[in-house]
Image 1 (spheres, rainbow, N blue to C red):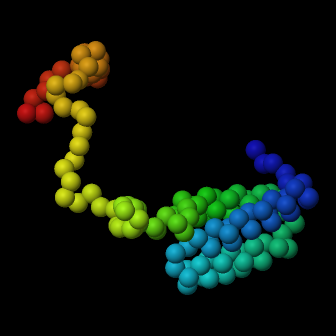
Image 2 (image 1 turned 60 degrees about the vertical axis):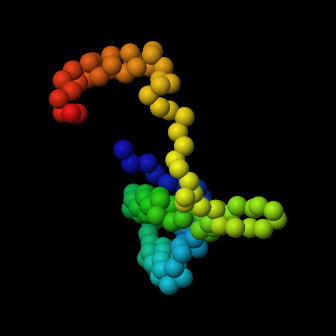
Image 3 (image 1 turned 90 degrees about the vertical axis):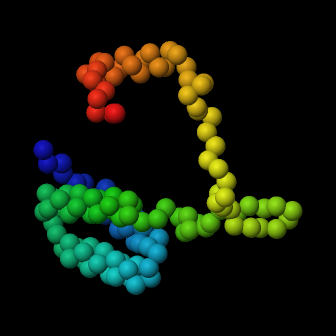
Length: 136
């Protein structure tokens, strides 16, 4: 089913996607990739500036929205994501590290809930994992 774009809402939608794509490129860590992506976005939108066919416009908008979704996936969320964790002790900042510490777990074989064990065994049988020879 093809949905037609109203002229005013279509223009607003195009501008919204265009601006959002350009803002997303600002989060690229590499400056040269930022500039290259911005040029590609601008060229792509300039190519479709004279299009009048509503079906073609909708197709281009779907493609732009798909590309925007992909850009959101591959770009870092914030520039502050690169910050390493810091431990403050006695008024001094030191890099936080777990090196040299033993892993701590609250779960050992002694403190398991019998109900969850029976439920687990029931689900194994239900999934036809009766034969445990593959585990040995």
